[in-house]
Amino acid sequence: MKYYLGIDLGGTNTKIGILDENGTIVAKGSVPTHIQEGPEAACQRIAGGVDEVLKQAGLTRADIAKAGLASAGPMDIPGRTLRETANLGEKWKYCPIADMMSEACGIYLEFANDASAAAFAEYWVGKGKDAKKHTVNQQGVVTLDKPITSMVLLTLGTGIGCGIIINKMVYDGEHSQGGEYGHALIDTTPNARICGCGRPGHYEAYGSATAVISRTKEIIDSGVKTSLAARRADLDEIGAKVVAEEAQNGDEVAMQIILDTAKYLAIGIVTLMHTIDPDAIYLGGAMTFGGNESELGRTFIKAIRDEIKVRALPTCSATTIVDFAALGGDAGFIGAAGIAKAME
Ligand SMILES: [Zn+2]
Image (cartoon, rainbow, N blue to C red; front, side, top):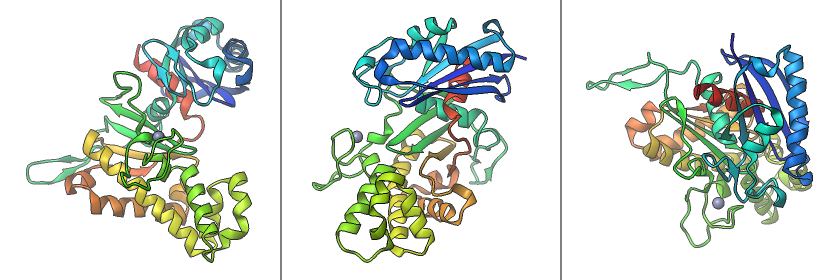
């Protein structure tokens, strides 16, 4: 059995895991990143975490066939450096993080975007693992017998993360910006909402959890009668989950906010379908309204699919799987290890 190490560098915590060649987690751990101390101190702390996880697995560095590091962008993947990082701070700007971390950990780490890593994990061991490709013959008959080879994972949270798999491998683009789909333009009108990046009309200014919170506050402040009004302060504490709770309690305004979010998300998905034509588009992250396990989650994904049917070419909507993702917070390190394995 071969073993693979994955590290998912996060703004708050860094997750570390060891997987076997089937993608099963053998051991895992987490260390605080303490970004304010800068990358050198963080690399040392994370290297200590790698030691712990190796010990937990009963393995040594020599047992690791390949290892990978995932980080949030913007980044230069071939150059193995970060760029002007939004969530790690000044000290991390342009730092050669992949080489620094490799040296600290005593093991060469492949470098990946965290959204791409999460997508690869979903493809390797998550929802993509047993998913079947829609193959259409000349008579228009659809068969589902081959495994999928391409997919997109949209991660709905503070922003909208995007990881793209084409031909069984991550696609990062020519300048490591291939997954910046959160900044795709979906509204060109003069009053378009402003994105976290400062530009108007971007996808995540409409479909992210941050956008849901902003829109909810605007609706509350407009004086509309809704049970959300009593929970305005909770929006900053708990986030978009508040909207889900009130919708489940029967508040129609809250439900409409969720259905509007589904429409916005569908608009971006339709463009992805017509650009990449992937086998599947999966939705993951913190804002999935309970996923397939809850009635609200099923209402949400149905609203997305219905809007896609209205807006997409029929062949696209008929052949692209649109569903919730399967993996949670471990997807980053699983994918970092998986990408490294795929580069053997
Ligand atoms: Zn933007």
